Image (spheres, helix red, strand yellow):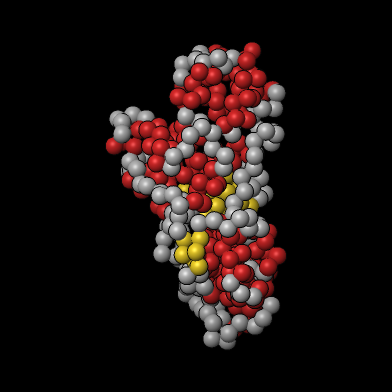
Length: 362
């Protein structure tokens, strides 16, 4: 690790985000950096500066370049972020993923400064209440499908998000309780969806469609958190598999026709459990039949875990930008400075670029 500029001073926000991204307490960081725990508290509160040798000690403890701790970055506000996680997820787990999402958004924002993002698809702001007193989010999903000229099953929800200028970054959270964090675009970064790469393919698609629902609808509505979630979930189900298209098949759903559910799952890329929920909403299943179906799905291992037949989502947009910068002559050292990551770390986080799409260099 190179010595930092002797005049460099850490940004207290970056110290806290980097610590939280490691899942560390203040006491753990103090122990690793060889300082008193009160020192960490005062640094993160901005009451004392962090520079010189102390900055180097903190960076070494956190296994990051000192420059990362000095970046002028402000964490995304709560109203601009969205968690998709189990209600039982511990607060420290949420903090860790949220901090990592902020650091990913920071890096995406720094890369985006070197490109002119020209989205192929618009990302409208739509208010469900403009379409219907109830279930307006269903109409919003239908409107967006028409706007984006989507017919039939969606091959890749990630491709659509990236074509609309939304950056998708997938990383294994090493925790099944948190699915994704979405940070709405700001002056510091574009829209970023940070998603758990360990999700089964059908659950990943539903999660990404759910986050798209938040990006399209949330800026226009002021409703309760529970209603926001319900709307996003209903939007995602309709966007991925419109009921007008799958309705006739849902009408035949029963314990004796599970094979049809599996065919729908592979055709539309949605889980069997979500299809059963929609069959219940359609009035095909009684309460007893609904419970029996879920009992059967659980007993046969169809609710959780990876199952073949649905293609994995593969983000490319960040890798495309890096690939273009390499082609433009940026050496690895400059890319290290831009992303504040070593080459191997960049590859692990952002993957390898596929065909370059929707971008032009400034």
